[in-house]
Image 1: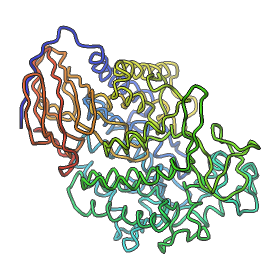
Image 2: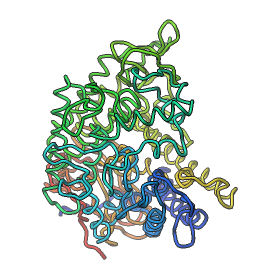
Image 3: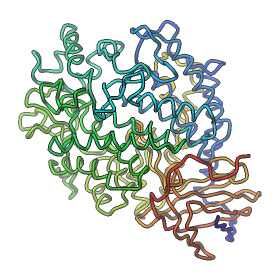
Image 4: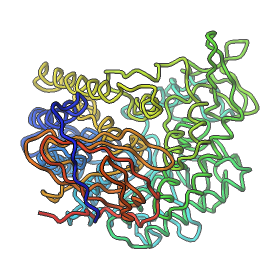
Amino acid sequence: MVEITAQTSIEQPPQWAVLQRNLFDLLADAVDRFVEQYFEADGEPFWPPTDHVGCDGFDDVVEGFYNWPLVYAMGGHERVLTHARTVYEGALRRGRRTETPFGHPMVVEEFEHCRDWFHLGEGNQYTYNMGLAAPDDDAVVERAERFAQLYFGESDTGNYDAEQCLVRGPMNGSMGPEYCDFSAYEHHPYGADYRWARHGLPWRDLEFDSAADLLDPDNEARLFEVLDERCSKGDIPLNLNITSLMTNAYLHTGDDRYRDWVLSYLAAWRERTDANGGLIPDNVGRSGAIGEYTDGSWYGGYYGWSWGGWHYVGIGPIISAENAVLLTGDREYLSFPRSQLDVLLNEGVPVSDGEGHETLYIPHKYGDPGDYHYDASGVLTDDDGEVMWRDGWYEFRPHRDDPYTVHLWYMSMTPEDRERVRRLRDWGSQPWTSVDRTPSTKHGAGEEYAWLAYLDDEFPRYPERLLAATHARVYRRLSRLREEDEPTEIDEDYLRDRNPVFHRGLLQLTMGAPQPVYYGGLLMAQIRHFDAERGRPGLPPGVAALVTDVNDSGVGFTLLNSGATPRELVVQAGAYGEHRFARVEHSEATVAPDSNTVRIVLPSATKLSLEAELDRFVHDPTYEIPVDRV
């Protein structure tokens, strides 16, 4: 392994480095307080209560701590990982004791019994982050394989039809897809007004066509009946998120059957898309026929084009393409999500802000003509003030909430994909050169566009601003913790709404990585750090990292040791060693490692700036830690 020693002394660490190291300490202390106040003494969450009967919510509990292993993997304190293990085990115990209306628990064999992959993707982020944090933990590896095996054709769950290459239900899990009763899932505690009146009625052929009519209990019962008829069986694009579960198992084991599953299932969805004229259908029956339960219509499925629209439909194509690129190195797979985005771009409507800027409003939904009265603030309307409908497309609005274009560029690194990000810029929203101090939305992550401005040299103070804002977010959560002895109302979201750990800035600055697609994507990164002395993932104590450039050739980054103790670390190309350092320049020399790792020696009070040329996606990816474990 090539070894590089820092020669440049520092007299005072820069602000970004001080803030970064302070943040790691602050997050550890915050987790200590959080666990003490918001969990039982044995690590169990307060929710669900003892008498609770329900199908939903386990993923929300896990979202309250899912990112703790990720922070540890970047250099966080050991006790952050210890707490994560403790409360996850506690959540599993709670889930195993919580009954559903179906005669089995909410959690069976440590996996949710039957849920859609919007929610399963959220909850399984913990599973994937544990692969980064503790890949040599036998329990982590065993779970990774056992969870993935739920989706092989020979599984007793009946989740997967290997001959048809399709998942047999929009909801699935450890008990299989046969427990999809929408009256059980949707009626309590939400009701139709929660999901359907807010998003609009997916179909125009029912006896009522206004979302407001759904608030009538009689109509609500009819809605659930129709949902069960049309949306309880067959495959939907969200199930492409299962490719992350398979890729996670591959990263632990290197077993080709997991990779083969990803590639064959993705190929099946691409064939369906081609058969549908280039647009991904949102429902496929168990026979393999598009529209089998929707009278032949390719839209109208669960989480489909006529309900949640592109925000939900786009998740599967981008996540599965990322996973396929990681597993094969072939970036052609990105043409799948790119082709879907281009359809929306071609249908877009430019809207001027009156100051010389145009925002492209792209359609997010597709459906039949009719009454589209629903909560659709911020979308284009026609001359009558109704939601604009044009050739089937409607809900024209900016693309600001979805990170898919950023991820597409990040995986391809092509100028064309970078320009697509710029073209979809929302000029009417928060400027790209500012950082919001309030917690950002989970799916949009909040800072991708400001981060891109920094990489384009338009926002030089971004690292300091982002880290200061992250501190402010943590302090705001700690303030809430001080003000309440315990939550006055405990529901499935109580942990997620109070979690004091914010990781996104650390991902961008230390690894040059965007937030993974929140609903079940894996981390994709330029570089990753390992503590050579302690034999663990993450930056050593006192060491800060700043990725200053990400481009089609490689990455620039600075490492700084602000402590009095010399430190050694290994820098890996890619989150899973999938990239190769072809050439590395620093102030003293240029070296050609021809490897996916370099060893860095940082004497006390020194820094080292490097420009690395990367050959991307050329190595077999793995969770294996490239340092000796202590």
